Image (spheres, rainbow, N blue to C red):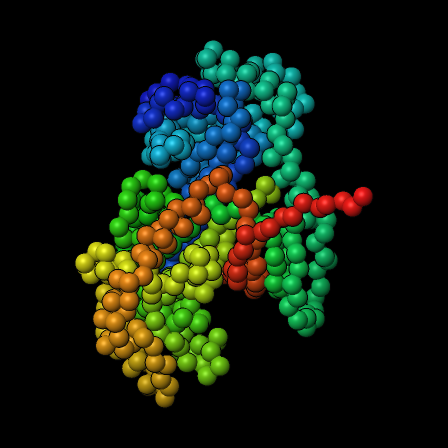
Length: 435
């Protein structure tokens, strides 16, 4: 990697906007590194690492790394050299992103050494030319002068969480799930007991795994919803996010597709129904919602009912029927394109076990024209929903939201360890002192 040639100049972060579309070299300090990873059911994984960096000319700048090895080397508190990264622009947002020929070199680490050692000691043995050494000197002096608040917060929160962790036991005590308030995501991620939690965090990304088609490089990027919304007008977002499923438990009921997160087959019974029967209709396909605060990130599994709350109580039926009417009925969702086939197969599957599917408006095809007529008399819910999704994914521009979630410590983070139950906008009222 060290011998790879440069395809562009070494630049300051303050001049990045004038190099959009170009290959550049960046010598920067790493504030925070956030990996976004999801293992695909058919093998392989989609990996992206969001890195927040800074230098002496611009304290904060975003970099997206798409190579796993580069992401592992971008450690908080290090000074790194990013070689042959491309500067991109999404509307008014400028960032750097890695490509196939990109590489990463760690020039100064760990953070404690950067703070304690002299600049000359850190620069002396560097096997690079004068421009790189001069830039490294400036970045080190900036770090020593300003410090890294984010790095300190991360270390302090992690140490506190380790100290609060209860000792391990070699027996199990039956406990009912209790609700607790967590002050940070670091505290949430280190919970050792299943429970309900409330916490404050900012929305960072919506990840929708496509388990029903092959995964080329462009298809992997489409799993990250913010990328699709920022690049161009995406006509198929609703089609990808909506499918046939149970309104109550949120399980997709298509035997060929659906992101079921750990489920190997269509669930026979509905755990949310009093009679254990699925209520089949159009639902939001389960997806992962990545949320952040200053201490880290977690991924929340979001199913249909919780997705409705997140999207302003707009149901998948309203979005789909207005979407279908707007596009002439052509771009149906993957699961919905085969409505008759999917519903018939699933009904036969339940019939063999002596059960039946509860009646629903979606199952009764004669109701569809009436719903189409109702959509004409109502607002364009598809457009309203699309605006809400775009607003949610305005990274760095929204205040934290209050989340309520369940924690199941028997599951890992990619299969629903943290499942969102509700979300609300917090209201902080100033205290009025009485005289």
